[in-house]
Length: 454
Image (tube, rainbow, N blue to C red; front, top):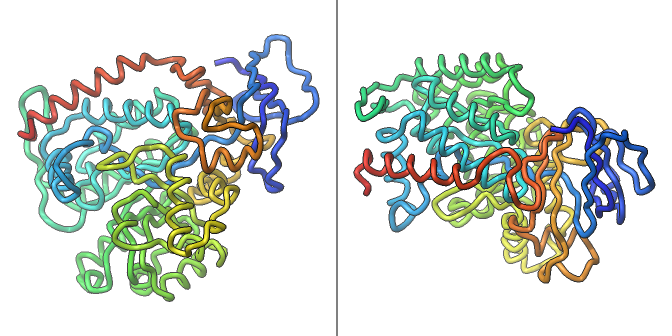
């Protein structure tokens, strides 16, 4: 990686506090951070690498605040969501090894790089019931691969719901069965949080807790689990991530546990009650809105209304299966259509606002707004270049509107994380894309045989 990179002649969408759009500007990157942005000349060192962004939009890398590790290798399983969930639960519990998690991580990172997502928050496993935290090896394999691929990631780890599970762990063709205990999962989460606390700025650990409703919280085992995870997240100063809030669950958890604060990130948040919204406002908890998710079919996240009340709402893909990708451009478009249809008013979520949800508000949701989410001097150089010289992105006016309404992940030409160029001219710089795909294919075939899904 060149320590100094000069990006020249691009249309720069800064997402800074003034939301400046510079029609022909230049960025200087030094030691992984943005040092200068100017629509005039920049005096760069003689040995600086130069990148001509003529015809490109230069903008912050996109931030996906809710997705899943494992899902890129479960696409196409089953003939509908219920069959897919059953098959995925079987896969995660009974058919994986460390190579599965490493190969899947490389495939997931590859997809994100190719569609301009520089940061993602992933739940490690299949939702609240099959979290592979009975031992640390699977998460370590995932994280080591993500580190090698170069993207930025928040990995949410945590316990299952308190019900019996037996996992298989493979070594070659043989496996051992391990009963899963809450105590072991919490211990592994603490170990991984400590292990990765200061290892690399691109990797953060978060704690994940299943969403329990008011009735479930009256169970002492459920209550104790929730309290332990809450306390662990606060002890380790991590985010607390939950997947699936709806219909009063936020208020119930706040009343029972005082569970939420400004480092809480709650995904989906559909059919909220007035009490739920009041807790979000009072606690400072953030929302990951997933317009492409199945939960957004069965209920509605009132994202525009929450934003009006000052609540941070970001965008997540809920990727990468059963029926959605990591393409955040697709989710920006879908978020607009989702709420415009609800209000029968296409002025809802205008282009700049939905782009905020995918950049600076995503950073705020992850408590990283001082580091990423906008192009400003001093921030980490997480940057994408979008090729605008294409029929569906023409004519060359209103760049924010063209990005939020017309662009897609395949329009991303260059992806940069922390000043390291991961992709240029749609080609990976440090990795072989075919090798990643072949490796994922082998892991998939092995998994399918073990799960007896072939």
